Length: 357
Image (tube, rainbow, N blue to C red):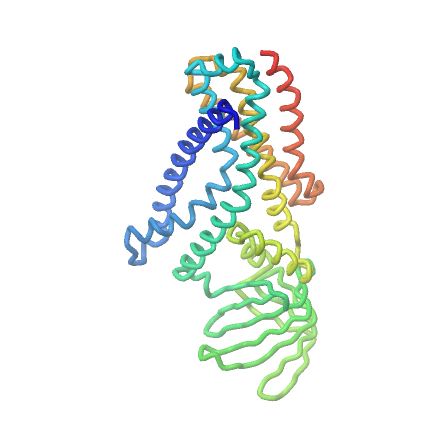
């Protein structure tokens, strides 16, 4: 590897490390305060709250990586320009395009490292965090999981427990449903089977149910069953996809598909992860282009502020397209890649002009 490439990469690493560490501790401190509020009625030591925050922080860091890369690139160029090293490189025949090329390729490599290694580690830590947190929450009374045998729900209501299994999900209905009701001593009270259950409200409507109780079988036209779940709450239990590793996400997607469950959220999450290396690279290129235009201004505060405003703008553009995709206004894959296409066009047009400077 050539000396100037090593120098540029090392300088970028230093900038990235500084920004990464700063944001890690900002998020960590914020998390500690959040845990202290959540566990205020539980006797937990301060060090245990820090431990929980350490488990949760990496997954948040992964979400704000574009912002971290953008600021890191700005600081990289502030250092490069401030020490007149950029001018030295130019006199040595290293033009703007080559500098951007080196940093963008390195960012792409880092992007793949982050989704292969960092994401899987952060999701495992996030899962551990949620498991511990749920032990102190009432949410452990209500559980929903998807397996190869369909959707399973544990629903504690009044003094009893309902274990619900459904083979399929069709809009607001569960299909081929079996509900086993237990008392507080886990003794089976009755088993209810229904071909279709309306779960749009917290009072479920069971169509043509068969009730097995005390060795007798009774059939009804319809009955109503109170629950802690409706369709919205069931969907929310599967919204924390950031606690699943890549392998677990693909396994869950297969289970979703077999169950006829909506794939929109999980596909959106997977597309986002797959596109992350490209997204980080485009953000880095855009930041570099901006710094080549405003980098020689001496006011560093202006440069950082501009970067923050740019990050917020990009975030809302992404959010806008994501909403369109998840609400099926545009194809989901287009909602993920359209911001990348826009960034690519802007970068392509700008980088030609930059190389002339």
